[in-house]
Image 1 (spheres, rainbow, N blue to C red):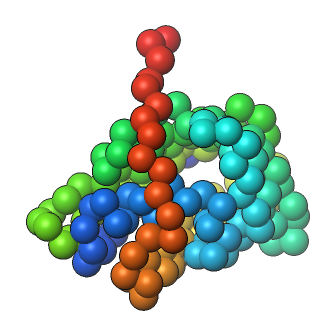
Image 2: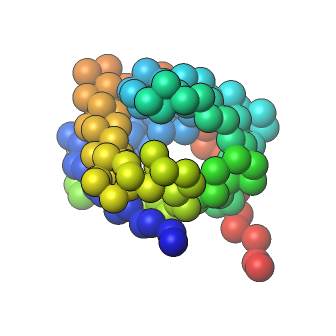
Length: 154
């Protein structure tokens, strides 16, 4: 049975700054607690390594859609089954709302348990808060990728 998580956070920075930082996937371990490493293989392919409760997991994700300052969507192509999207909404010139949505298929007893008691949702909330603190403290992005990836028709 698939699980869906939706969370959002408002950040007091312009949408371009927030979006630009989100495109710096290799920086994710700086604010995502369980993420050990993200390796950008191509513009659209990422290899993730996470250690969750002492268990190392790896997966390859493909960015299926990317529109600067608006949206990044992905799906796993290897490893745990999941996918989702992050959207960026300019509330005004200096405030951005980030909306995160992910669907995943828990596997094994520990993932099912963590899902049932809300640990995975809690981790997503914490990671969004850590991201907001990371970018707010800096006040600027560590880099940017302004390219587009167009969604392919199914």
